[in-house]
Amino acid sequence: MPDGPGPRSARAVIFLGPPGAGKGTQAKAVASRFGLAHISTGDMFRDHMSRNTLLGEQAKRFVQSGGLVPDEVVLGMVGDRISQPDCQAGFVLDGFPRTRRQAEALAETLRARSCEQPLVIYFAVDADQLLRRLTGRRTCKVGGEIYNIYDLPPKVPGRCDNDGGELFQRPDDREEVIRERLSQYEAQTRPLVDYYRERGLLVEVNAMGSQAEVTERVLQVLGRTG
Ligand code: ADP
Image (cartoon, rainbow, N blue to C red; front, side, top):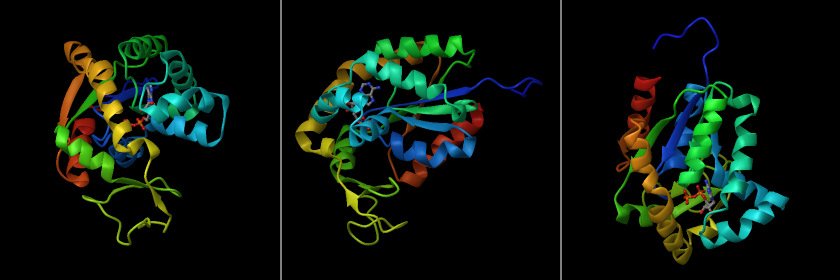
């Protein structure tokens, strides 16, 4: 669609898929190329928790146990974030919405801001790959780069290739917490696949294969629909 003379309304892209599907990795790789802000609710909660803010306190026990943070808390946080100036051209939502109520609230927010209908990219990945990605995931303490000790190891074990930062395992990537996150996904978030498909907003991307291969597929979808 050609751009009209007026300012274009913000583009909302939702990355939907189970924990471990690679949403965060891909959002980091592609968002800025399209001038979109990357909004990761998981990263926001981890940031609040590390700074011991009130919001961090509210979220902590849910994040640590693999449960979902209550909708009101999430919605307030995302609403504030979307109104920031860097979201004006658009944003990639990574890890949100995760419940039907969040999806409905988002639709309302987008309508109120005259945003386009969201584009939902669904990351399809086999269940056994998820466990491998989650248990193998390591993150750089300095820059947040994501590695996988099985599939995408750093050159020096435990150190980031970019800045030499220490790599750590997220506490919620322990096996019993992973199980809870996956079961929350099945119960609360998977129904959103049909919710968005029925509305004609969903594009499925094969999220198996290397990081670069998946990036290429996501870029194609974003380029095609932009
Ligand atoms: P992953 O997608 O790999 O499970 P995230 O980093 O997206 O991990 O989220 C980590 C945790 O943060 C979740 O397990 C949940 O406790 C909380 N969280 C993140 N986003 C939401 C959301 N939209 N609604 C409720 N809780 C959330």
